[in-house]
Length: 118
Image (cartoon, rainbow, N blue to C red; front, side, top):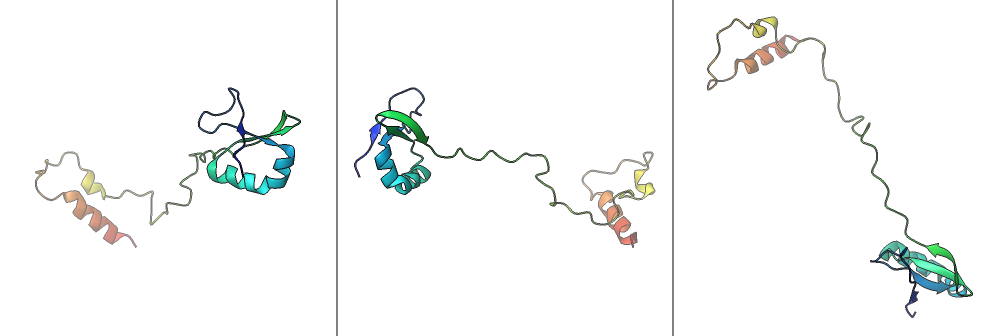
């Protein structure tokens, strides 16, 4: 199969310029041309008596789905979510500050609070 002529004009993309194909040739090689469009992203202009009548072009890439709702079904509720994680004693603002180098008292309080849950 000889390569078709390239169509002039500003509408043709620079990387893949439209190629001219006569209607009779298009009729004979339609499936092959469609495969080339799908694989190589080529564009063909079908002509009838030298005048363009149709264009065979690849389908544009699908737009990304909306971000709204994209994480639906990805998280699960485990246990009670309304009650505080820590007991009220842990929220005492008047308690002396702890040394940051020592183990966090919050971890042990969280473990105790989780152990109390039924």
